[in-house]
Length: 181
Image (cartoon, rainbow, N blue to C red; front, side, top):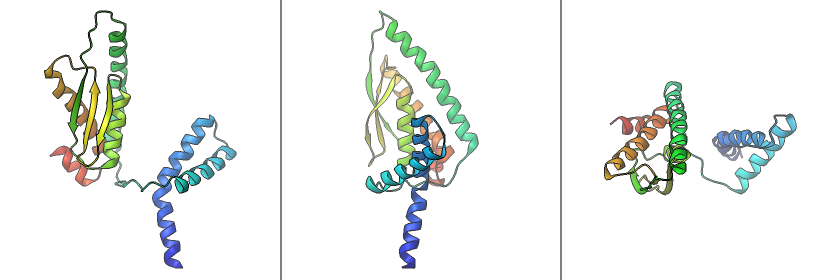
């Protein structure tokens, strides 16, 4: 009986970050933070985590605020610059796109870092993740910024820099070694 309670408590603690994120998303969707919103958010979050069970994401338990700030600032700058570049290209009648699919072999094996890197890469206009090979840690990107074959390594480097910053901010010791090695 005690071991069942401990297992349930351990499982709930592992799901806690997901529940907190879902409650936050619920509050954002309703546009207000009230006791009723938070209470219904908790009910919906627990229902979602019980009905649509996913294995818990292995968090490293490590957070580096400096590297998170570096990632956030460079991401915001990339987002700003790329938005104008893509808008200019879309409005330019002489623009001749040369998109390509680029495979990027990630250096870490963390599902969390792979997911966050693919999200950050897809959010920046001009690049979109079209496929993910989790087994081999490969992202396949559709990139608009490849005018020549020489631009492909730039796309790879840019994606690997996202991975590096995310791993330094949130990754465990193995992830940090992989991106620095």
